[in-house]
Image: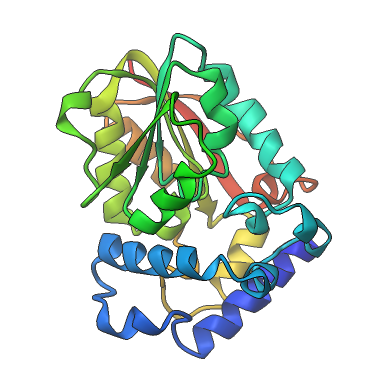
Length: 262
C-alpha cells in the first residue's frame, strides 16, 4: 500500500494548496467535461518534463521505464493484470473496440494489436496527440469528444468498449451519460468494462475522508451498488466483477466490472 499512500499524500498537498494547474481558476469546475479537458491538456503539456513525470510517479523504481503518458500512475504489472483479465478476453482481430478516455495511450497501445479497429475517445486534444505517438495508426481512430457523447454513427457498431482509470475523475451525472452511450454503441451481445473508485473499500474510504469536496484532480468515489444501478438502468447486465486483491493497487481500492448488452 506504499504506492497508494504516496499518491494520497500528493493529492492532499495539491488539493489543500488549490488546483495544481494554473488555468483552473478560469474554468467552470461545475462543468465536469470542460474541467477534465483543461486539466488533462495541461497535464499532457507538462508530461514532457522528466521532473514532472517523476513527481507524479507512484512507483519510483519504474521511472526509467516510462514510455507512455500514464505509466507513472501505477505499477506496470498491476495495469497488465487488469488488461489481461478485463479487456483482452473480450477483444479479437475481428472486433471493433472503443476506449473512453484513452489518455496518452497507456492501455490503447496494448489493445490495438489485438483488434480490427480501436476507437480512441478523449475530451483532451493534447492527450490524443500523445496517444497518436504510441498507438498504431493502422489499427486506431482518434476521436476528440466535445462532451460525454460518442459519435452518432457508431450506434450498434462496437463489440466491446472500456474505460480504465477514467470514471474516477467524472461526477455521477457524466458517468451516467457514458453508461447510456456505451449501451447505444454496443451491438447486442457486446460488452463494456468499467473501472470506478470504490467508496466501500477500506482504501477508498481512507482516501474519500481526506477531502472536503470533489475535484477532478482527486477522485469521485461511488459504491459498487451505484455503478450496478446505472449499468442496469442503461440496459446492461453484470457478467464479471473484480475480486479484492491487496497485491494489486486497483483491485485493492477500486470496483471493476464487465457488463453485457442483451
